[in-house]
Length: 181
Image (tube, rainbow, N blue to C red; front, side, top):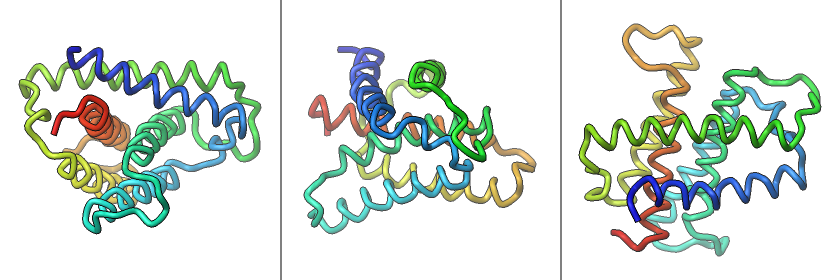
């Protein structure tokens, strides 16, 4: 499989979980402000780093579900940046949520393909733990941008950071799925 096919394969798994959670909970996440989404991604990335460092998970789940969570929360973050947080349930249907999910997943794929061309698949030579560290760095950058109310001098915005976090998480999932390390 090439990188595009591998990306699409792991994204199908992420989307399937997102869809099941939409069934169970609806679009309850619409209440979240982007800053809260950033914090959720932080919790997931920090747990991955903790498991990588300690070498064991006391909860019994490994890092794979956390990378899936990062992917799905990054997409939620992109949706929330565009639509804004709802004050109460806004009635977003599962079909509408999945259409938004697919829209931003497609944008992340397109970004990854452009960067992958320019960087010549350098991510394949990286360790999964490096993706974790890069995601954490992007989270801290995002928090700084959020504390500046998005007023940066030269930096990309929160949306670009969410897209990068998603793509690093997908790289981790690709390596975990296809056995590349």
